[in-house]
Amino acid sequence: MDLAKLRELLEMELSSNELTSLDEEFYEEFDSLMKALRIKAESSKERGEEIEQQLYLSELGIAEKLAREIIRARLHKIVDMAVEGRPFNLVGDEKKIFSIIATFIHREEIPVLEEEIQVEETEEAVFKADKRIFTAYLLLQDVPKILDEHLREYGPFKAGDLATLPRTLGHILTQREAARRVSISY
Amino acid sequence: MLMGRAFIPVKVLKSFKTWKTGDMVLLEDWKAKELWESGIVEIIDESEKIISELDQVIAEERANEPIMPIPPGLYSRAEFYIYYLENYVRNKAEIEIDVLNAKMTKLSNLKKKYQHLKKLRFKKILNAIMFRPGSLEILNRLAPEEKKIYLQISQIRNEWLGES
Image (cartoon, rainbow over all chains, first blue to last red; front, side, top):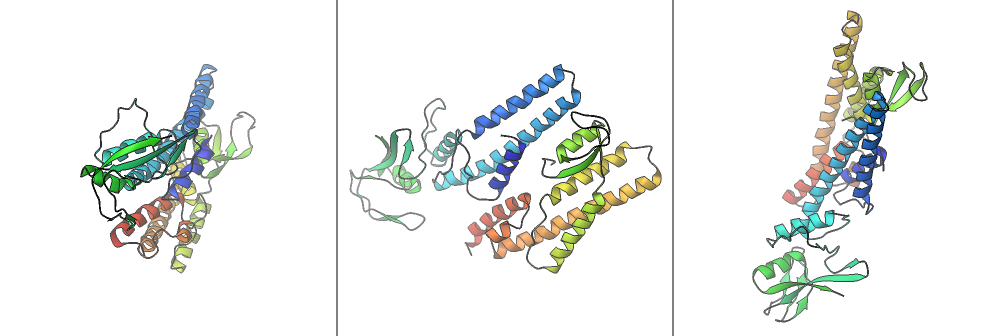
């Protein structure tokens, strides 16, 4: 990780409406870069190398600005994805942020931050280590055929059915107490 | 913002690391700025070259209806020399009036042409958003800062008018 890499990532992020695929360790690598630059600046100061120290501090400032621009661009996209309920290419803590925003949008209770928060990478399933997790909806009453915002048909369902639904539909049914959201892992 | 998108030619005034006095080196814009401010290097003034590059790009934009590809790093190079000329005239109080006038003229030209090109392209970007939103072909002709504008406004346009 260096300035050139950060610039490249920012340009990729600005060139697409989709979240760019990042290494899972992107944020850790960025933190390491910042730490290394701070240490180098500090060492230069101790050696009395003012110009080197200034160069490292300047590099640190630019790395910070580039990372902020990357984060800003990604957060915009994450908010859009949370509205649509379709997470994709999230890395590290972005999954938690997505989950919190989606929960907030759907007017559900925001989990306590210390709790484990899980994000499904698709509507159907996500692989986490050796575990599969599904979000499904348990129908509490009979529901006729319904359409989502893309005019895809779901149902009809009978009370007691377990169905996988887009988050938007699931949210509407949950709000009307016609379904209950359940997480299934195996 | 100087982020290293442009490379700036400099002349080394004081030995530094592996460079010797008199060496000519290409540096990333932010590093050239820091070392110039520290008195280690002298910036080789290429502002006239940038002005003529801007002239050329403006002429191309005028001659063609669709937005044209922009040379990589042109905005960053223009921004760097605006910074350089502004600071040169500010910090060198003892320079001869002729030199000062020459630098001021270049600064004024550079600023005017840089702004003109940005506005010219911005109008074309808005037009492209109206008639060709989210087009990959258009996207490939834009500077990184312009890509952000094009994609974000295209999205708003599509939400309002529907995808074309």
